[in-house]
Amino acid sequence: MRRIVSILCSTLLLGAGLALAGCVVVPARGPVRVWVPGYWANPHVWVEGHWRYR
Image 1 (cartoon, rainbow, N blue to C red):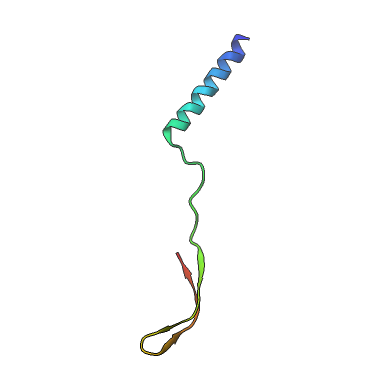
Image 2 (cartoon, rainbow, N blue to C red):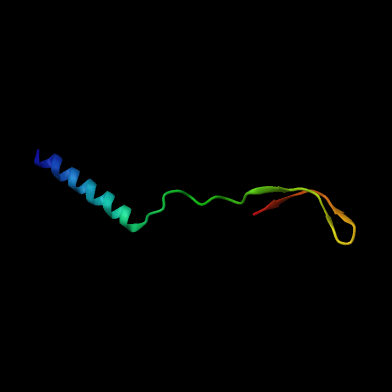
């Protein structure tokens, strides 16, 4: 019984330490491809649609 309580307490302390440390587990997102539709630019020039990375 004493061993179970010891393991439970150590797990609880480790979890609390990680929560307080602000540990980020999720990796950052990579660049996202976004479709930019065609539009009219000045003076009277049509710009084709294209892929943009952001």
